[in-house]
Image (spheres, rainbow, N blue to C red):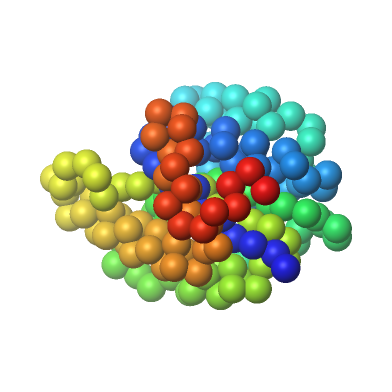
Amino acid sequence: MSTVTLVTGGARSGKSRYALTLAGRHERRAFIATALVTDDEMRERIRKHREERGEAFTTIEEPLDLASALGRLPDGCGIAIVDCITVWLGNLMHVRGADGLFPEVKAFVEALRRPPCDIVVVTNEVGMGVVPPTELGREFRDRAGRLNQEIAALADEVVFMVSGIPLVIKGGGAGR
């Protein structure tokens, strides 16, 4: 039976690196990248992430329709990393508008209920900092927090990363 693992934590907490470690235990791996190149700094971040994961992954770049990306995973894929939910949500808000309904979110959550392989979902914990000073920032934080809760509720395992250290807060199969 395929599992869903949610890896969350703050910026630069080691989330992506930990997800890669989990995936390293599988022979056939995929990486679903949500980032869009919006400027030179983001281009460099994406380059570094690609370099870090190397050639061991089939990469699917999908900034908007994650349910569709799960459906495009290669046959025999043992694990797929989705990195990252908060970037994806920002993409949706940018393209669809901040006050819009996002059917892509519902479709992705439904797809996670029947994962085609083990799935590791990477997301940022956005609710532990200061309250954003803008309405748009607060809307993003609220949507991200609700989505993280929804994914955590259906996940088999939830790992909170702190300074590169994984803390299993739900489930117990870390290192499976």
